[in-house]
Amino acid sequence: MGPHRSCAVVTMARDEKVLFPLFLRYYARHFASHEIFVLDHLTGDSSLDAGYLLAEFPRLPVPAEALDGRPFVRIDLRAAFSVEENQGQGQGQSLAQGECQGLCEEQGQGLVPGHGQCNLHGQEMQGQDKGRDGQCERPACIRDANGSPIKFNGHFMPVLWRSLVAQLAVKKLLGAGGFEAILWVDVDEIVCIDPGGRWSRRSGTSAICQVSGSVPGSLLPGVRGQLPGPDQGALSRLSRVTEESGAEVSALRILIDKFVALPLTVDGVNGRLEVKNQQEGAAMATSAPLAFPALSCRGYEIHHAMELGEVALDFAKPVLEQRKVMFRNVMYDKPSLVRSAVTWTAGFHAINGKNGRALPPQEAPGLLLLHLHRADYGTALARHVEYYKKNREGQFDPNQNMDFSFHYRTVDPGPPQALKDGDAYKAFERNKSFFEGFWGRLDSAFSPGISDRAPSWAVWPWGHSTVCASQCSQPQLIDQAWRNEIII
Image 1 (cartoon, rainbow, N blue to C red):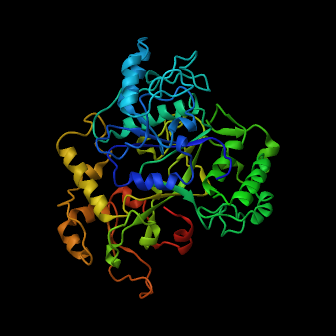
Image 2: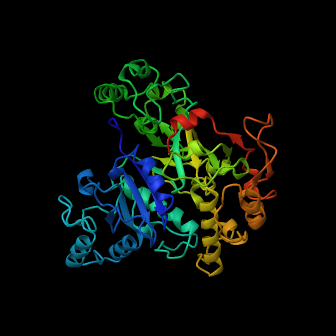
Image 3: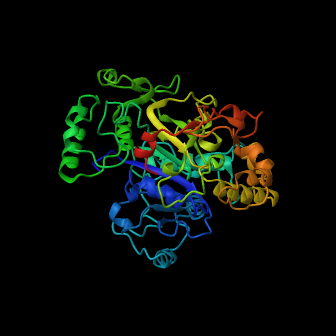
């Protein structure tokens, strides 16, 4: 992969042994190990054991060599909040150096050269509480709906708290962490480039911007003139790297590079970011949506169509090769790519402006978000069964809005039985409330390649009369170009 501007992909996880390996497999093809951050919220399984452990938010950029082959950076949120709260009370670090070193050795990581102490606790830094914008980065400066400083939340699925932690993490990583942009996603979300969009090979505008595979260097010179902006030299260097080494080129990182390269400033009147250099801004046909603190994706749900005979997903194989159907879901037009501190609404579906109202989405041309929650029926059902049980046991945050994650609270999923080949209609009867209240059901008369009818819903996802259902479109077949070029 060629040289790129600094960007981190960040997620928050708890016991994601099924989906996290897929998440890591995809994003490791677009980001280096020290650019992949996982905020660990009380993971009890072994899914995050391979990560490079930090017990606080970075106070210095994490050097690539510090990971020593580990595939991602794992931040223990409980420990990180303990450190931050103690610092906020003037107590310094929460663990003595001896305890810190012992924990490091227990994790097999030892001391990290250049960090002064270890990867769990960096040295005290002058002005460490200020980010690039001079604003305080401590949790005490980020408050909940009641105006209280946020603290660690041990409840299951604390939706609003997750958004506040994301706000804190972005401030930390854009500040002390040294990154220029953050791609914030959930574990089941894949941000990629539309193979038929502006940044794709199929559109005829950019042979460099394919999602997978090697791009011949001979195809690159004609592309450079079609991607205006201040980074022509970077594209030239990338051309040489690709031509000499055959390295994979990430279309996603090319788009991020363009986003980061624009010189922007905050307009205090409407909260928008505007281009400082109008000559450079005028060269971009899409300068208006790019001149913004965040870019939104175009959201699709990948759907396990059991009615068409699709079997359980083999997570070791490419996902889209095993699925035929997807559908648009406006709820997943998320503002996932940010380059300055933002305040997400619950679930990261929008960004709040200064007046507390959600800002209109600024969609990046060709930027997709593929939601994999529905890509495998058995996995989704098992998750729903677990979450429904935990809600009934009182493990959800009692202080948060009951509408958050309402489908886990109100829809009885039925028994957690695995789907067997040809067992779709038995599943409909066995888990009827799950299909009618959340999953949805395709019209059984549709059969790709046999019927001329387009796919349609017999039962809409999220139920027929819910607001969430109104955000969904009719199903459509996944384009073959997506299967070829979006490798998950």
